[in-house]
Structures are given as C-alpha cells and as structure tokens.
Image 1 (cartoon, one colour):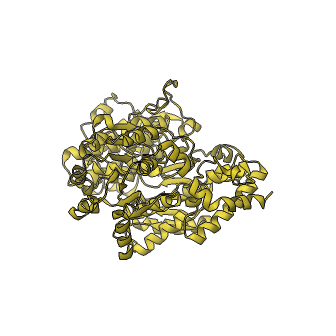
Image 2 (cartoon, helix red, strand yellow; image 1 turned 60 degrees about the vertical axis):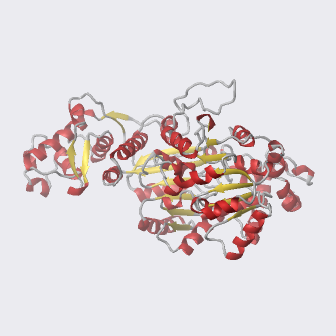
Image 3 (cartoon, helix red, strand yellow; image 1 turned 90 degrees about the vertical axis):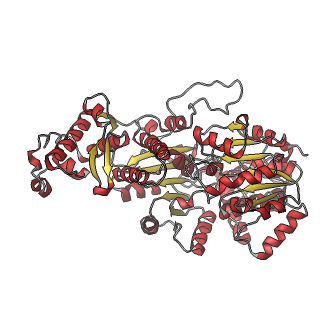
Length: 627
C-alpha cells in the first residue's frame, strides 16, 4: 500500500487534506464501511480516488448519471489515474477495451450506474479481479426520505453482500438525520461509520426574495454576476423561453436544458456550458447531479424547490472551486399552492406525505425568515453555525447568529406584525363562504378585505360582508405575504380541485384567537442587496478581475490573463473543459509566483506530477512572455 498523504501531493498537487477528508480516507484504508456526508466542493472524489490508488485492486464507483461519470473520468485521467466507464453510452469497442483493462488489472477506477451494478453478469465480472473499494456516489438516492430517491439504489444490497470484505464508501452532500439513518441501514454501514463534515459553504452568499417584477429582478441579478451561471425553473417551456429572453436582455451566451430535449441537443447544451466561462444555462432539475463544473459563479431559482435538501443540493453547484458564488431565489404564493397540491395529490402513503409537508414547511420558513439564512439552513441539517462537526480539536466553538454574508445579514429587513391582517384574512374567508356557500380564490378575498368594489364583488354581494374594507390599510403585496405564511403554517388550505379556492383548517382557530403571532418581513421590489465587486472577490474592486485573480497586482493579473488565454487554447485543442487543465485558483497561484523554471512550479496547489509533466514547460513559457 502507498501513503495517502504522499499520493495527495504527488498526484493531485495538494499539500494537505481538507476538512474530514483524512478521516474518511483512513477508514477506507483500514477496510471499514463508511458514510461520508460532505458539502459539494469539499473534495469528496479524493476520498475514494486516493484509496483506490493506495489499496490493491480496482475501485468501483457507482454513480447515477452517465454524463457525470464521463466528466469524473475525464478529470481523473487528467490527474494521471487509470479510469474508465462501463455505460450504455459507450460504443462496443470502448466497452471491450474497458473490460480488457479491468480483467488485466489496468484500472484504478471503474465507473458504472446502479442499474448495471445490480446485474448477476456484472457481479461475475467483478469476481475476476480484486476490488480496492466500492464507492456509492449521491448516496441519498438510496433513501426514500431523500430528496432524489431512486429505486435502483435499493437493489445494491445484493452487490454489497457479494463483497462483504470490500470497504464500501457512501457519499452525499445532502442528507438530513432521517436520510442519514436510512442510508446507514440500507447499505449495511454501522452507526459509527458516519463521518459528518460541516454543511456550511462559506463562499456561497444566499438571498431569497418574493417575486415582484421577475424579468427585472432576474436581469439585475444576472447583470451583477459575471461568469457561468445556472437558472433553475420548474417547467420545460420556461427553460427555452427564459434562455431566449436572457440572451436578448444581457447578450450573454445562453442555452436551455430539460429532459424533453432531443438527447443530442441536451448533451450538446451541457457540453457547451461545461466548456464556457460565461454561459448561462436555464434548466429544470434534470440538470441536477449531471453537472461537474467547479467555476459556476451563480445559481438562481425562479420557482420554489420541494425541500431544503433540493435547494441545498442545487445551490451547491455554485462555487465548487471555493471562490465566491451567489445563490438567489425568487418565489411567490402560487409556488406554495403548487407544492402543497403536488404533495396532497401524490399516490404516496400518508406517512410519506406528512414528511414531505414538513420538509416544505421548513423551506417556506427559510424563505420567509427575517434572521440569518445560513443559521437556519445549517440548523435544518442539525448543525449549529459556528460549531461545525469537522472543527479541529481545541478550536473555540461558539454558536453564531449572523453570517454577515446572506441578504438578511447584509441588509436586515424591516419586520411588521401581520397578526391583525392574518385574523382579518381568515375572518373574510369564513364569512364569504358562510354567506355564499362556496369558496373563493386569493385575489377575490383580498379585494373584499381591501374594500375594492369589483364586478365579482358586486355579483356575489360581497360588499355587504362585515369584513369588507376593514383591511384597506394593507397593500396587496403585504396580504399576499400574510397568506403565504398562513398556508405555510397550515392555517389555510388551497383546494386545487375547486379552482384554487381558500378554506380554513383546524389550525385557523389559534390564529383567529391571537394565540399564534404572524410576523413578516417587509416586501421589497428589488433583488436582495448585492455585494460590491470587492466583497464578491475578496479583494480588488476592479470589474475586470475574475474572482480568483482579484488579490493579484497589475502584473499578476496580466500573467493570469495570459495563462487563461493559453488554457483556452489547450482546452479547445484537446476538446476538454478549461477547468480540467487547471482550475482558476491554480492559475492565480502560478501567476502570483511568476515561475521562471519548472522547479519554481513545485508545490503549487492543484499542480500534480502528471500535469507538471504535461504543461509545466508551456506554463513557464507563457509567464516569460508577459514579463
């Protein structure tokens, strides 16, 4: 066996492990089954790549998406690992070559999908060569409580049972306590096998706002965020329409991505985004786990996700290189209605529906929060901000209530007491239904409360209702915020089968009696306060300076620009994404060092032996050309 720390330095060019990486690797090296819960961007892939290089045999990696596997193989190969996929997308010649390499012990890593891994024929193949480990990526897919449950993951027990002495490593960035317990049970990992790293992504700044002129809000957000970005929407039609709108409004290269596109078009759009350093892709969550791109600078949600796990997973696509990234979400009352309806109409068991309602409630509480977003987000995953589970021994651990970088911390919102408005809304719903014998939608209820004599109000004689006009001091925006919260806490239900009409619930009584206070943030018409360029990059205020190069002086930025131009040429020549050659952070480290020889490049973070051999002389030449 080889020394993992030595492999880390020589192969990957990193001088030390980060966070809980070493704890996970030590367990795998000792042959122990492990569940590692680590945030996206924390270097999960190294926790199986390094043991696969250090232990005898081939590392088997189970991954849910073919495109993701191909990206991971491409990056692993660039670092000098012998890696291959065995998927339905590989042609016959490639599959034959992969099988030959595996049988001859010429692979460090073999990536396959769970569907293939559970077949009897594949198990017979695996028995022909020793396995160094079995890694189960995106392990939350095995849990019915997870946000992206996939039944094929439930069938992995047969494979694992066939190789009981091979260390299994389950990996996920997103799992609450119930999901973690389920993963451990399903994959036969002991409770002491859980390695829980902190969920915090300090480089991501979170902002959430009610929809209020969405085209203007989105245009302002994108204009303030250069670099590659993802815009998530729920409907397929919206992806293509919005992509065209963004391209016209901003001039940025933009593509759409959804499951209904022709597979060749979908693959081409993803490849173009992965290769680009400025493209915006508008996608449904079909674009979730299939993206392995470290330099995404922003993620925007234009619809409310189903739960915090999904939101965390999707925002985690931003800033995987550790550099600043923005996560912004806009949502509205209709989102709450739609999500509630999808849960209620689901054919799932009532126990499952109750869990999903609780998850949606937690997300709504995060969206409506007036305190620190990061504190709430981490609390959902049982982590106290300022007290991460992966903090070094002896480090002071003090709970913190403000992160200083989410929208609520940067610009604390004004808060108003909506209890009176909530009671008036509930009273109006009750009295209107009592008078007319039927229910009505949100707009009509608010018209009555605000004293608006519309044709519909006159048609049903609702100007005679005792609550008509008693809420005239509230704006429609304020009342929509109150109604969102009433739906969120279960005090109002929306009857989707009767044209989204509103009705009271058992939970209405406590609000009507004044026992449940309703406090809300003042609605704003602009996106959340933006960080200045200096705040986003952590250094220079120069608008031209990419995040990685912001701390460099003028000469250093010139070297960085020359290195980026060289990297783009190499990437194009080899049909690779630029980040596979070098991450921006590595280019910035080289630009700062200004190497005059190959020896000067030794120790640069992210520059391992294979890349030093492949690109070292060219890098020195590029630097010499800008001196």
